[in-house]
Length: 316
Image 1 (spheres, one colour):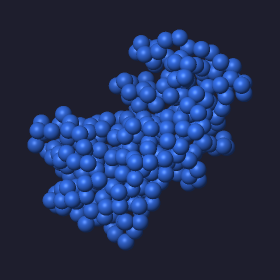
Image 2 (cartoon, helix red, strand yellow):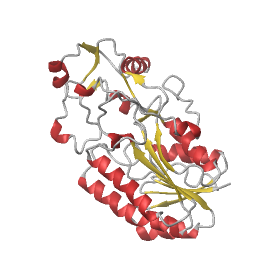
Image 3 (tube, helix red, strand yellow):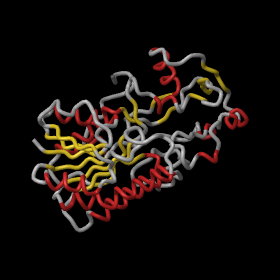
């Protein structure tokens, strides 16, 4: 089976991906600054513990396994997998150091394809009513957006004159049945320490079940070379409403009282509890005054690769 190189392998996404690949008998070569439960448990799993900026260690690992590695999946330097939601200037610098060498090292190791984990946050706050497609302008304004757009640009620059196939997965905020922080961000006011809902809670947002992302990556790995390059929006096919989030959290006994709000300007403004001055660094900043905007991420292109069968009701 094909060999897959994973950065950020000990993060949540890295662990789910490795589990899926090993179950399919792929050879997995993995790096992270932290150890994980796969180390020493599977003969097809090779792990090196080092910082993602360790050019020597990672370049040597890529070169050593160059005859095996078909695809590099770059998950490191990503919120929900590797770094905290408060994205500091230091994290941005660390990502740039990584981007400067890791794509070149992958090319030198004759990797056939590179999958980069990016984010739908690059589109910023939606204005119109049309679903957000890959061709939409990138208007996001935060450290995390800058980090990911830089990583996208660096990837395209390094593989420009090569045969390497680039895949940029702009992934909506992820969740599983147990990991619901990104869902809660849309219905919880940390300042008041209470959940809230506007009117009947039928407004919604685009998210991505972790298993839809894992299926998409597996789909890319299994498709014949050169038929899939480009940018993909990776998100659930259907939005999740505020009402559904609250019902799910109640079923799992993770939420208490919920305050029902009317959708008025004063009420919305009062819920901007993190402050505009933190918007640049805090990945989880959400402006409630945009609650009625169109947050629908169009995954039509990605559905050519995977079925996107997972949702909040059937995830685990």
